[in-house]
Each structure stands twice: as structure tokens, then as C-alpha cells.
Amino acid sequence: MARQKTEMRAQPPNPPLKPASNTPVNQPQNQKIPSSLLPGLPLKANVLVIRLRSIGDVVLTLPALQALHDWRPDLRIHTLVEPLCVPLVEGHPAIAEVIVLRKFWDTVRQLRPRHFAIAFNMHGGPTSAFLTRLSGAAVRVCWAQRQFSSFYNVQVPIHFPVAGRAEMHTAEHRLQQFLYTGLPEKPLPPATVYVNANAADLVRQKLAEQRISPGAPYAVLRPGASQANKRWPVQRFAGIARWLQEAHGIATVVNLGPGDEQIRDDVKKHFASAVIMSDLDLRGLIALLAGSCLFLGNDTGPTHIAAALGKKCVVIFGASDSKVWSPWKIEYRLVENAFPCSQCPRGRCESLAASQCIFAISVEEVRGACEALLTKTQQQIPR
Image (cartoon, rainbow, N blue to C red; front, side, top):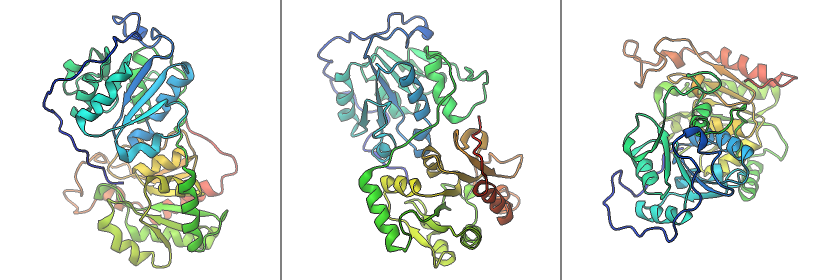
């Protein structure tokens, strides 16, 4: 999914801002001890959590929100996200309100009347920093060493441990701020996203038009990715699609997003007889994934949506860290090569003119990973 642009500047002008009508009464009892902040919140206090984007990041914030809600269901958790990401959080039982990012000062005026007791910036960029500072929250939390650090009166050490480790998965990283401010540490739950009923009806209709009847098994293949060194070749995805049909009777639905224009022609060429869906919005994508029996893709946001829907996932990794971005607490298989330069930010290897970390992965390796999941009789969930 392409990142959606917003109408705002990182450092907006400073027009006069009307103060909130009432002095907040829901402040923590002891603001000097970080671990007392969350336990000290009064009943039904308003809590702001900012994670503006991207798809995978927003999904992997949900386990931490669920953990906070499970511990203190009285707290009213408000999340601030960009419009594109709203379908990922709507209907979630841990979230009292989804606040949609609009023009900067419109958003500030929307935040302040809620009298937040505490605000957590889990995004960390300049826009989220200014929004946190102007939210009206007396306690403002972010990680240490971020931009505009003076905006935060609670800064979480970057190596603060989760589960006794300083190196952690992205979902655990989102938990850091809550643990530091007093959430008791327990095993982190899975992420969960919810299907929009209207979108589900539309997807069923689209599938039926392509001769995939309700209940028929299908796999969703997502060959796109944001960088060339994260994209496995399209023709190899097509080889897996043929094998799924011939060996398991599983149809393939290829999903393309707004950022996949550069591979669109290859997909049409190599998937001439397959179902290609490139016109789905995010609610439609969630519904499509919810009905599938397998997800196969590169390291992208839809991978984490599939995992949050409880789908078996095979994920192909190139220039990204699988320890940080693997599917969270779901049955999955990773296919990757242990190249020492796998964290390369470039689009191709300097010496070989192609990203060997992902291009060296064979169809046989990916097919073996799919076979292992499809024939597995007893589910084993990692962590």
C-alpha cells in the first residue's frame, strides 16, 4: 500500500491556540517515577497513542494496545492514525476512539478537548512530536534520542529490555513505552484486525465473478514491495501459483497495491490465467486475506495483516531483518539467505548488479516452505 500524503508541515506556524475549557483532572498521581505513571492513572483516564503509519507498523502496535487494555480495561485508549490506516484499527475492542489525522491545526483542536492524562508517541517523527506536544497531555512519552526531545517529559531508554532482551521484535518495541511507565510485563498477545462486513460482501462477489466460489480454497500472493531488494521475482511467484493449483487444488489471487506499478506488466504476463486484484482498498484487502487459506509474499505491510487475521504465512525476506519484522505469533515460515549484508539500504548489490539476498532464493525453497505449512497437522505458534 502506498503511503498516503497528508496536508501538514513538520513545524507548523504557531497561531494562538485556545486553551482546553477545563483543567485536566485525570493526571497520574506521581509523575516523578516513570513506573508509577500508568498504575497512577485514575479510573477512565484518557490515553493517547500516536502511530500515524505505515501498515505493518500500525498492525504491530495493536498487541501492546491489547496488553494495556487487558490490564486496565477502564482506561480509554485513543489512537491517532493517518486516513489510510483507519481500517486496521476500527472495531478493535481495546480502542475507545480512532482519531483520524487531518490538517495539522484541525487535528490539534480535535485532540485538546479530550484532556489526555498521558500521550505516547510511538511514531517518533516531527509531525507526531508536535502533535504530542500540543495534545494537552501533561505527561508526554517517547523514546530517548528522538527529534524534539524537549517535547517529552518521559523519555524511554532505547535499550530498555522487553522479555529480558534489548534486541526485540517490532511488536515488543511498541510495548517498551508501556512497560517503562508501569504496565506489568506479561506475554504479549497476537495482533488482531477486523473485517468490514460490506467489504467482505464485495470481495465475495468479485471472487465469484472469477469462478472462486464461497468456501473454495485460495491463496493470496503479494509479489510487490517498497524496494527492489525486497521483491522476489514475479515469474517465481507464478511458478508457486502453478504448483499450488496442480498439487493442492488451491487457486491463486494475486494482489497488487498502489505502489506496485513497476511490476504490473510482469504480473499480467506471468499470471495470464490467474485472478489479479489491484483495485481493492485496505478494507477490501483485509476481507480478501480473511477468506484465504495461505498468504505468500515479501516483507510488506499486508504480511502483517494476514498474520493478524490468523492466516498461515510464508514470507520471503531480502534486505530487511526477519528478527524484527517476522509475522507476530502466528504459524509461518520464513525463506531467506544469511547474507552478511542483508540490511543493505540500497536497491541492488553494489558488485553483482542484483540483490542476491533475495534473488538467490529458489522456487524449490519457497515451495518447501508452503508445503510444510499446508501439510502440517498440528499448529505450532512461535514464541
